Image (cartoon, rainbow, N blue to C red; front, side):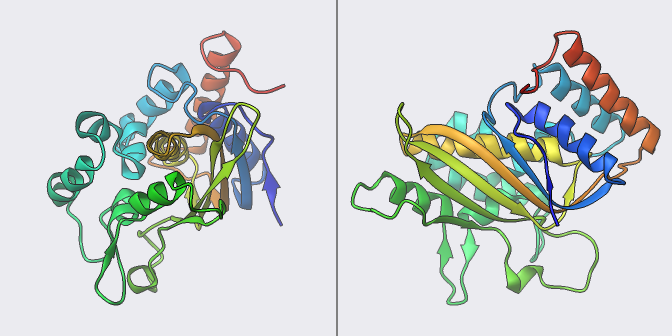
Length: 261
């Protein structure tokens, strides 16, 4: 069983259409599939839809859009220090302030650059992926996998907390205008009100980083939410539906990005 959302041009529009689809599906669905043609388009607070969602979340006392996006990729840190210096800066300065425990710091980016192995070695998955993509001697262009789920830390009987993003798969796709980098990710659980828009924006920024370092164009982002829910972050169903209506109004008035027809 799956619930496909028609392909959308940008993250804000994909969020609106995914919200609408899952609400119509009694606010819970399995294997929801989203596809975003340009995950960087309008993916900032300058987009009125992003700003409206951000303000809604802040008013409810939960993590705003930018904070959620930063758990996937710390864009400001990268802009300031560049690669590879920002890896070290993240591990030594940002992560200690996150109140991490042995299981989960709340930062997916940590697992991307600091994944321990049973033998005690730590792998920087992103650095390795970029190195292999950029290496012309690497002929297999479909083996750039990113693991977020860690069975040693994430297998428990607790119904709460822990990682929701489980896996990512980068693909190099040839196009008439040059090679482009696509990304497909899988979520084991996905809160569409509190997390989805920030997740999409963070994933787009992650793609931009990998593509830029590997000298590729940016392709499309595909997200599979194996369990999606219209969560209620200290908000009523009526408030959530009013937020969606308000965002639709911003687009209808020409203030936001338009969906694909």
